[in-house]
Amino acid sequence: MEETRRNRPEQTRNRLAAWERPITLRLGLPADLAALERLAQLDSRQLPPGPHLLAERDGRIDAAIALVTGEQIADPFRHTAELCALLRCHAGGERVAAERDPAPPLRPKPRLATA
Image (cartoon, rainbow, N blue to C red; front, side, top):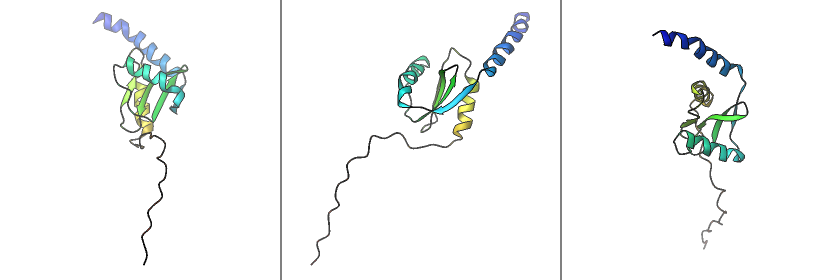
């Protein structure tokens, strides 16, 4: 019990320090794919399908949410609960269609024969 009380000020300092650093929420770009795959590996999960909304802190992607499925990945070695909550809030339950391959080439429609 005494040890828990001694740790509380340190936990509070760590939590406050995490909030003192700016957080950026942004849509993922193709250039983020490698960082997202590393993040998913750290979280022992598969990378969910994109597009992704990312939470960056100190220039590093610490958490992400897939806008299609709502699945989240986060760095288990950092304080990310608040980032995950922000991502869920910002995504607001809105889902967008999965990223698709480029549209297939258009094919001409057959014409009906007229007499």
